[in-house]
Image 1 (cartoon, helix red, strand yellow):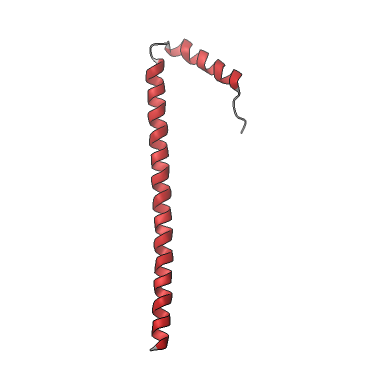
Image 2 (tube, helix red, strand yellow):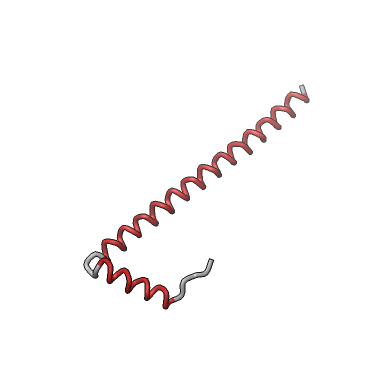
Length: 74
């Protein structure tokens, strides 16, 4: 996926200014910023929960292996 260059970003900004006007631009920027922050937070929360599940699974396997080795010695 190509990354937009500076000329494309300037063109996009001009189009947004024409459509919404300079008065609404700060509100739009604020809304976009909040959306990005919420997306990042949800993404990191999901990643943490997946990593937590993986860690719990690994801990359970370690506990099972320890119990098996204890059962074999008795």
